[in-house]
Length: 548
Ligand code: AMP
Image (cartoon, rainbow, N blue to C red; front, side):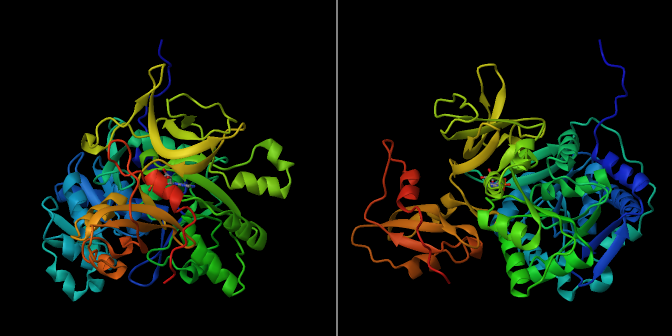
């Protein structure tokens, strides 16, 4: 027997309609690349999103068509979040920190038909535009008055405000199956080419509900949320959706991610909640401490993407009275998996004990189930001191990558349930708090962005003097991890560090360049001849990179 409740599909447009109707007067504030602060209400943003939906239809974007963005956090980017997905197309957020070669690959792989970009990325677009096959329209996210003269070199260039101005705001958000694709984000946190993660309306709306909960990101209509995490990183951790769901005021920092710009915005807009990777907070804390400033409205900040150092938890808590919420997730998980919030017993615990808990990545939020398994795939009981690989499942966890790249990533348990292997190695304590202890995937994460170790190895091995090269992550105080290249030269070959590093120029994004090169006599190999990078990681544990 079926239940007898209304069947309303969980659509992203319903979030916007809720915000417009019930929080229409609430503000969205953006620092624009044009240099000023822009203010609008949810009501105005929703009307502009409908105009943009009309514009997209006029550009020939049809259901399922991919529309890409190369943009900072701002109100226009938010309008696209809703206009594109809401009209049944797929919003593809491109990461502007990638090398142009990778962007060309990703845009063509995704078959992006239209690409919207902030003016900051004009040089990047100029490099990419002649090489992509799929993009028909390039749209500069500005008005005609701010369009620089050199924008003329982009073929078929359109201007965002022209598109909005040419339309009216009468548009009815279509109703369709909630499993329809809504957005697409590529991740480099896997081996091989970047892979696409295709979210659905259902996964996004369910994730938004869960993200807003008190024991997750804890957001309400009375909050002022400033997402530092970019909107090109896994939906800015869901915050543009949580904004509409709760009616919170949203503050977007644009390109101003340095300590001073962020601090000024936190204070002027009375921000209460923020979210970002540890590297950003380091810059902010350094600025605030150097200038003996205080946060007057900030209550808490979500830190994730990389492990939050215990000293950062204390710096925020003890010096500024800001509670750090340590969270863990992945592009493949929309992204939220765990959040580190207390259980009742911690309320009476000592400060030391509480900080020890906060340093963990946290406990599963409802909607995500997780378990650690040993090498044979057997589940480790909560409280086991043994570490194992973390597996997850849930309605906002990836089933397979876009276009089935890499085949079936899931593993089955004895009951026939599918689990997604995260590549994170963890312990889970008796209370269900997960802590990352290692990583089984062969990648490096620097300042919240992935660096492909295999790409770096392949380039080194293309050098005539290199016999074998392995790239591993070395700890770094600012970036969390930086690439360290371990190289075995060919017998009798002459090669120095500078020469090898110069060999990388033009082949990768500059910030991917290894921080150091160590020449060794041999690289440990396994029985099948594969480099044993875990052994190298052990060997170079605690390696101190040279400072620039
Ligand atoms: P991404 O898909 O770029 O969001 O990266 C996801 C990966 O980043 C995870 O699988 C972890 O390896 C790492 N990560 C994310 N959050 C944390 C955290 N709080 N602590 C440590 N590592 C993290």
